Length: 458
Image 1 (tube, one colour):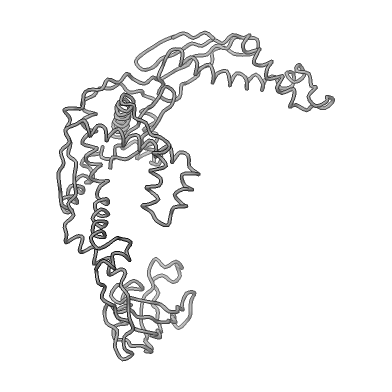
Image 2: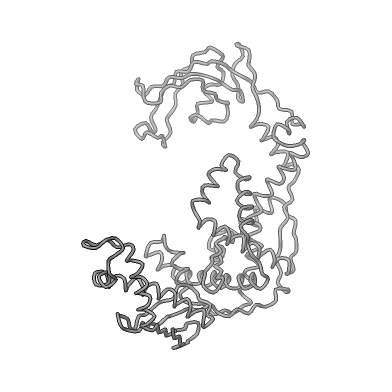
């Protein structure tokens, strides 16, 4: 194989590759011997078909198969030989081919740029620490207690009031006629929550055990059966029981029922849960502050094919008119993503950062712990979608890079209340303020493989 650099302009290199016809003929002969064991032709015993006969009958397809394999192998060898770091898939332009001829082709390669990183020491960013006030924890405790309250029977003479639980059977009609789903047994309603039908709870206030109550209600507009939507309906309800709520003591025993060691531990768990709800958004704001400085302080030549690929991914679900309308912004965002990806990956490689299979497994287990009862679904998702695991690996890789950068820059910690956090997040998420808030980064890794970091900055 002979490889020469035919031209080099910017990040685009064109290689000329020539594969000697003798090498091709040898590969064809080897393939014919392999096929001799497999081909069955009339008039010949299995495994005894002469190679010349096989070649005469299947020559063109065999030649195409062999050349296709040679192209894949030699193109990678040519890239390695010239020590090129490719960006995306190279293009092959056949110049000469055919039986009895040398294989001559050109390889058009878009290369990754040389990235020179500047020191991050002068960069500044703010990290947020959430302060969860006691009153918010107490409020959440009461909500939990309210969700887990129990009820006890009222006297048969006592009427139902707001907050009581009414248990009843019902039979419903529309214009005097029954319909599918018009009967219910042992329905339990906590009055005041209005979870059954709008206005239904209010009509049950004042009922007693063994009462028969006729109620009027309107079926919802989003009823599963369209013909029943918004229909006025009469409900004949037989009241089976009326119960009153038992006050819940928020103490160590209650905390244990909720899976905590004691009330102090339960409050701590609630505080962590509330903080975690804001962590991702606040962390994204810090991350964007860092990424903006990295992008602003570096100049990088970008391969056009990667920009085109990124735009294609970004706009694949858009209508043609939407693509055209936002063409300029899409290109700007694509360039930003590619640039940041190259810079972050360079930083990751220089610091020998890696994501192990154990890191991925640990993250999957973390997701499982955060979604109790859905363990099987999460595991099956990653098992059946290798691309999801690869995407997760990319996110973890980016996270490691950002964490390392945070340790090197001037990172100040600002303690904020929940109301302050909500205001900061709201400002950050305001539309039409900064189109790059939806920025993601694409990282190119290795000489031949492209690796995308798909974690959003929001």
